[in-house]
Length: 110
Image (cartoon, rainbow, N blue to C red):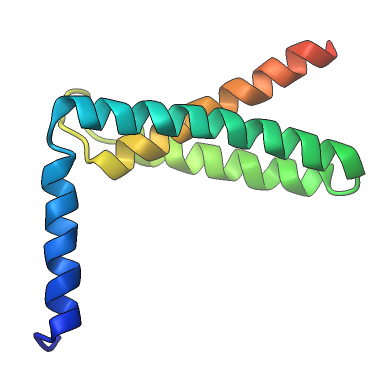
């Protein structure tokens, strides 16, 4: 790849964001925001798919596949290896999403 100005800008901004999230509090804040975002996303999915009730099987299959693939990627390595921020964020998004689905199922009594 050629060393263009756009390539240098993208590389520098990526490294700056990476160093900005090395602070433990900022990393924790990003993870908590992803957890709450997953909860919000779970509420949106249950509300919109429950409204039409046409694609429940297909949506369920897609969601289970997505959740299990994130779990497989997140937990396939060693137990105490330092994980990347993207992997931890995806795992927290999955946990918040799953919690929202369970909470909505308990609210409906099913």
